[in-house]
Length: 71
Image 1 (cartoon, rainbow, N blue to C red):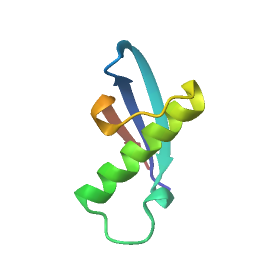
Image 2: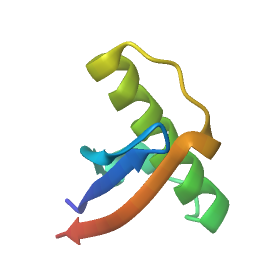
Image 3: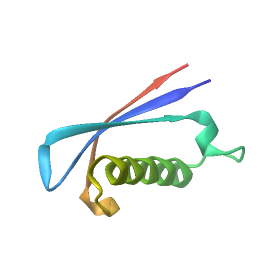
Image 4: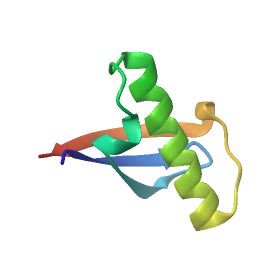
């Protein structure tokens, strides 16, 4: 199963890096579009920050550095 690792930071503290992991399963069974991929990535990042720091953030506060995929 394909997995993705997203390396990102927040505008408020760009020197601190975070990582979120998601699997192909989290995209559902529909057709993958750019909007769907972006939405899933950003939702996963927001969930990771909420669990890690307890913060609610918006998409504008996220800086994505890298997306790595593994089969």
